[in-house]
Length: 280
Ligand code: ADP
Ligand code: MG
Ligand code: MG
Image 1 (spheres, rainbow, N blue to C red):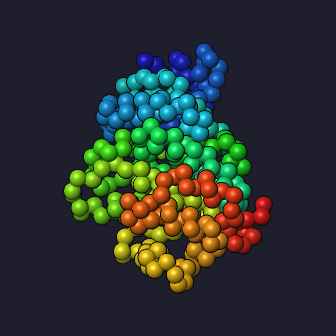
Image 2: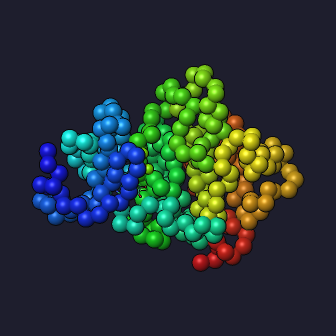
Image 3: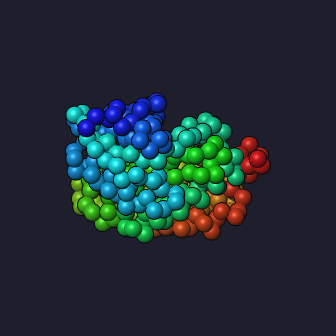
């Protein structure tokens, strides 16, 4: 199938080792859409079909990127079409070292939480929650959608302890030396969601890796375990209410981690102490 016959490429939206995502105009429909090209060299047909069918299955949720039911292949790529998000991804709008204004962050988080709740209700785990995979339709995050189901798996299916993207990876997944039967679990997304929240509100990562060798992580672990005493320095900008939420989202043992629903109860509370991220 010749892509250029049906689609006119406007520009590239994303690129990686996997392939690329292009903004195109469908010549017959006259509408814009995003085509995701996955290199056949690095993608098995099975993985492509899994990503495509999971995305299609979840499309009814208004907070998940809409798939158009178009999939085809070229000599080099497997391709599917999805709705175009005109403002790109969340990563690009988080000001480094500063974070998003609290109302913007909350609006975004609220929508992502609904998307995750929906996904989890369908017994699926995303496994790659991060700002790059949250697509935005306007810079104020009035409309955002969860995307990229390339890592998504059914809850309970056996996997190796390696997943997602490093700063967002839960502690039980960081220790890749353990080879016992590990299963896909919702708590992976809940942890990543907690890290995502921290990133959105501060413009920093809470730690590099959730491993004992990371000082920032160790400080957090000590605080989590003691339940009293000084809050680690990067966490001092948060209110007590939001720290209670973080403690549940970032519970060290995956069995103790709350469900993503917990976030809704905290949306009405103030999260940041100072003005830099708050009163916009
Ligand atoms: P990968 O599986 O390689 O991470 P993604 O599906 O996450 O691929 O897409 C990579 C990047 O391309 C995203 O982080 C985003 O910036 C951009 N992108 C992907 N899909 C769209 C879309 N539908 N609309 C706008 N930008 C998109
Ligand atoms: Mg991605
Ligand atoms: Mg992916």
